[in-house]
Length: 272
Ligand SMILES: Nc1ncnc2c1ncn2[C@@H]1O[C@H](COP(=O)(O)OP(=O)(O)O)[C@@H](O)[C@H]1O
Ligand SMILES: Cc1ncc(COP(=O)(O)O)c(N)n1
Image (cartoon, rainbow, N blue to C red; front, side, top):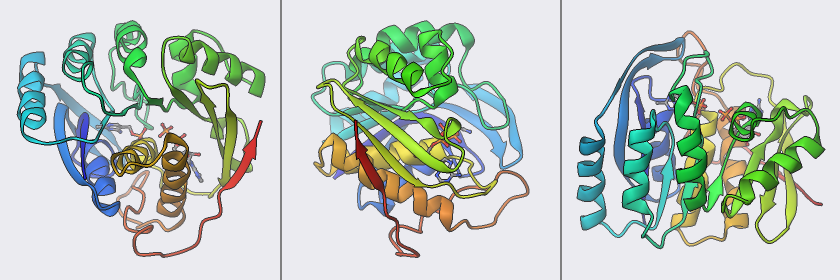
């Protein structure tokens, strides 16, 4: 099985392309990549960003897509509107699931996407997405409305579904302090919540990338969207629950924890 990640490089190895490829590998999926940017980054912050040109991104995508039978694709840090349009140009005719993680701001507050690119992310990338995985601030930015309750989240999800996204995973951790709950809204009208205990930790660098890469790996293996999201939730929970304790800031998650069976993870599933 082969998956493709289109994202930025994190020199610290916990987020971005590095997190994606490690996650693919841990799921038994061969990872290919197209880089949108290099970041000089560690667990303490992002020190510098160098974006590639749209032409160079296009060359990487062509090289990968003309040689490999890619079964699922994810996008992470896309930087600017020109790179988003280049990605859309290459993926829009492919009949493979696309996971769009709308990466905007790093945990340390540094911008990973130009502000004005939000419109292109919404109008060009989201209509192509099988799954979109915003956290609350990203969903607020995409919809232009504040989210402080389940009702707000539902309204925002429906706004995103109306753009053509097949499934919206609202990472609602920001609303429920005691649990890490994600709310899943499907184009079919199905809604369910996935809940795991919230781990009290600072070692959350790359959680969003890792979660969306796990969804992508599962889709590449032929799992349904629902199965992929549930398995990814287990993967990210274990990666957070058994940290590596490396770096001096917000440490990375443990990409090995799931395959090495370091612990159990019960995902509490609730239908709405
Ligand atoms: N402290 C935590 N304990 C358990 N799960 C968490 C914790 N923080 C985040 N998660 C889970 O990790 C996944 C990624 O979410 P999140 O950290 O909100 O993404 P992002 O990096 O985009 O902000 C979600 O499934 C979320 O529920
Ligand atoms: C290259 C790159 N891409 C994405 C993120 C966001 O990380 P997170 O998964 O913690 O939101 C990051 N810090 N660096």
